[in-house]
Image (tube, rainbow, N blue to C red; front, top):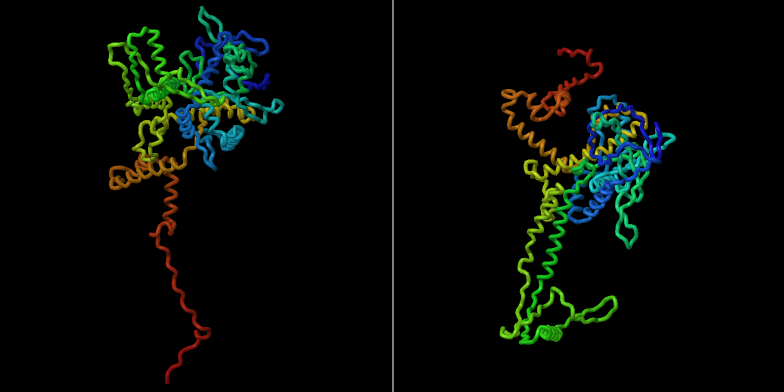
Length: 525
């Protein structure tokens, strides 16, 4: 095992792969040519690395809005279920064809990984950080002197301060670049990869991006699996909600301004200025305004009362001059807004925002009655939402694969080749809401039993018992064999099967008194 600066490296027997097509990955790594570098430093020349930091900052700002925060809470609560006495996630190795001893060691190391993450208590926060940022980084810390002890600690790394780099070494064959090898590592910069202000009084400037090279195996990295059209930037699950959120904010602000400006009733003063010149007419109008207008304000900072009659706001009366020959001085009333209660446009953009987050609108409506319902009554949005949650869980499970791989290889339980062979058979099962799962199982079983009762006259005549048990009751061969053994045992148990007639005990004959057996009755004379 080769130890490197700020990390460790697991030795792998990898053969170089030659191809003209670059490997497609969704980790958003920066592709560079393998030209080397002094002291492991990487300098960004095109400025593309700062996009990640800006994206994460934008997602975190969006998560603070009430609508998106409510949607995120609903998604995380559905994906991560915390219950006392039950593990949030379990590793299923039923499909792995290995001895039970090997399976037990793998399960023990997986539990060790969960304990290091403290996933039982922090699972909600870990999943939320990954969902909001669209990426998750952990620094894997081991004992360099005794790596066989496995992972000692996992430290969260801010995604704005770390970036993955992929160096590609290629050659040319008839003007076609052929990729021979790739080298992957991470670059960490405590100041982050983005724009920073040069000073409080100056505008932001581009930061000179340099960082420390960290080995690939020292970082556990999982992304959302989605990239932009160019494939060089990982986008989060909140990315498609940026436009609907901005539209909703703009509509809400305009609605507030309209309501404030149109709520009060205002007066319009038409003042007759006769044949006065323009300048004198405006002065005469201003004198009339100051004479009939009284606007006194209180300054809370200085405690003084000020006259603000020279300022006019959108909520005050209107004063308009009128020339000679008109109707003379007149006062009319400008009515307030009559459609202030119409918010259909706001609701429209709210619905668009919820749709962009893949959350059913009925879940975010506080007036909606919560009902368990039946499986046949579940809406299409709920079905799509449940599939969306399963996709999130499947993608998030890559974090467990990454950590478990490092733990098993460091502990010497398996090598790199064995991990690649065993990995497809690892299944991570997340805990569901026990009440909802129980209600669903009861409903499914009730439906099967009702169907079985309706088909009872045809069993053995048109449909075999084996077909009923396999296709309708969904029993496997092992289930059928186990149920047959239990049925035979119950048939032999008189308590469970009252039809069994127990042997009745024979009545005991009364014993004769001693000495009466030899005595003969005396003959009568």
